[in-house]
Amino acid sequence: MGGKVFVSIGMSLDGYIAGPNARPGNPLGDGGMKIHRWVYGVEAWRERQNLGGGGTNVSGEIVEENFERAGAYVMGRRMFAEGEEGWPDPPPFRAPVFVLTHTPRDPWERQGGTTFHFVTEGPEAALERARAAAGGKDVQISGGAETVRQFLNAGLVDELEVHLAPLVLGSGVRLLDGVDPGVTLTPERTVGTGEVTHIRYRVATG
Ligand SMILES: NC(=O)c1ccc[n+]([C@@H]2O[C@H](COP(=O)([O-])OP(=O)(O)OC[C@H]3O[C@@H](n4cnc5c(N)ncnc54)[C@H](OP(=O)(O)O)[C@@H]3O)[C@@H](O)[C@H]2O)c1
Image (cartoon, rainbow, N blue to C red; front, side, top):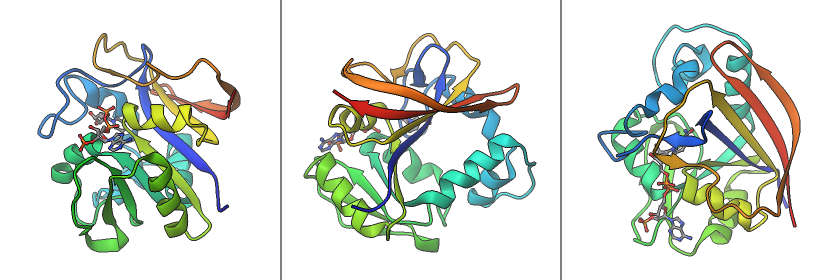
């Protein structure tokens, strides 16, 4: 069975994970980079971006925890397409990444242990492959919304962690549109700083 399946995702207070017009070259859409403002000064995040410096705080502990527990990742092709040009090499994952898409593509190996595998058979197949690759560690569903929605509705997610930014975006890509109201969320941990509130929910379906 392996480890847990968790989502960890940044969101504006009005429910958006990206602003409008998100595309390669405009990652996270108009204004969307502000969702992650809290992370840019975090040492543990900067290290994975191959940047120096940064500080430590409770947000840094959460970033470290997520990287530590994730043995493999699943993401949607639109998230991948933005990162394909934006992520450094080595990319921040340092683990296998399974990209949902309808277009087959050969695996793309990067430095530092990250290989992107393209999965055309849907979320269950992607998760099965991610679990097998994770070596008993947890699997992170990285986003975007279309991907998270399918995993939630299929009852495949154990934990949802939202990094809630005190920010109104007004439009863009909403995280929870189309999520089945039968999905129930029980808060397990809430911590934060002046820039962000991290809320971890245990997820149940039905
Ligand atoms: N705030 C955050 O922390 C955060 C985290 C992650 C992503 N994001 C943002 O979210 C946005 C992308 O989210 P999104 O909801 O538009 O898209 P997404 O979930 O990243 O990707 C959707 C794509 O995944 C593929 N896909 C999804 N379900 C599939 C299935 N069942 N079978 C086969 N392929 C499937 C399709 O690719 P094809 O078109 O290739 O078939 C689809 O177009 C980006 O702007 C990204 O920056 C934000």
